[in-house]
Image 1: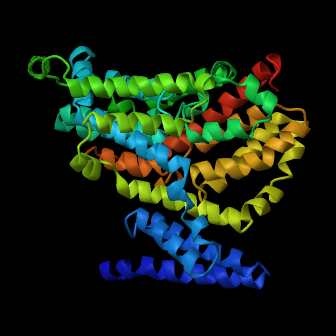
Image 2: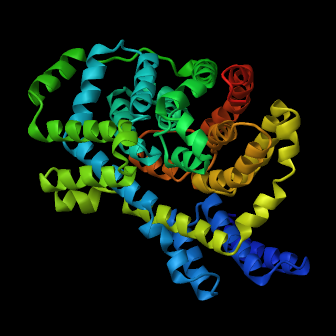
Image 3: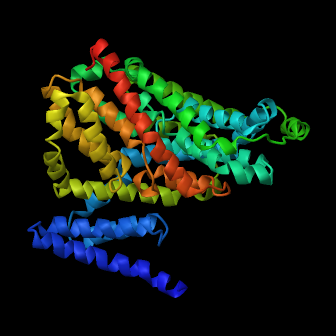
Length: 465
């Protein structure tokens, strides 16, 4: 029986793309689009079945694009020279500085020493930590590099009984803390900045950092309370008293002594990056250059050694990220994105007639597409199709972009949102029930939709809709 299941997934991976290829050719689809789809289906199956390390299927897909001549090498490899790649590298490097300096350890010990000894307090602390960094660290992967070690260290401080019953809740909270509230802040993720860049000039002037937060505030409040309610209901058995040896933690804090130079440097680096992002409309320096400048400063000061730079930064994830950007660039080169945009035109009818129905129809289509298309790329394709329709319909394009951002932060599998790969590795010692995590995220979907629908009268009142 075991041997059969060893070769069965590979047989599926081998036969499915062939079936896709001949089915699409029989329907008259162009050879390049057909080959692209067959290659991507192969990569998706290898991700779904976890047959290889996560970055390998992406590299195989890129190599296949070049071999079959689907796009020039400059297009296929464009992800490794993109601003997203440089920004992520810089934030991951800064995250390593924060962890290696001991600042994360000190922060965790201080919270454990002063917080109530129960898992609910620890959950709130983890979620608050992710939320604190959401407007100031402009990538979800960057926040994963900061929050992941905190989650792991908290779990290590729990006894075996609590760890067995509550680790899934802690892992889920840590994962959600870095992305759940990201749509509320302009600077919280590259996708938000992409939406901002697609807005007409007058909307860009209106939706600065503060007005973006104001327009998103009601949806954000409903989402926070919904999350707390769903978590309390779903993880009710995970709320336990924790036997914390405060005296030992106090001794460990005392042994650390006052903050050392590396810790101060890490803290200053985070503050500099946050301040630079908060004032971006004044100095107009791009976020990836700000982050790279902070990382270079840390390297210049010797806060990140060569060995740590090589061993601690997740290069496998960076290869995955660059590869996935290259895959989408190839898709755009072949014009597949324009085909998808054309197929979405029917959503404009609902947008003009009844925005509530539009939200529900968009959710059904978009969440289905997200099963196959990564986070940022799905947002770009849908936004490029729908934002012009919104402008012609007299609806603020920001609302459509914001709805896409809310819906996009729903993922069940790591390939949908690559930061999940990174967070999983950073919390590798934290036990989690993957099926329960997926079920919890499914439970959140109707509450996200409710948060959007509740805000529609508010958007009408402030003139956004």
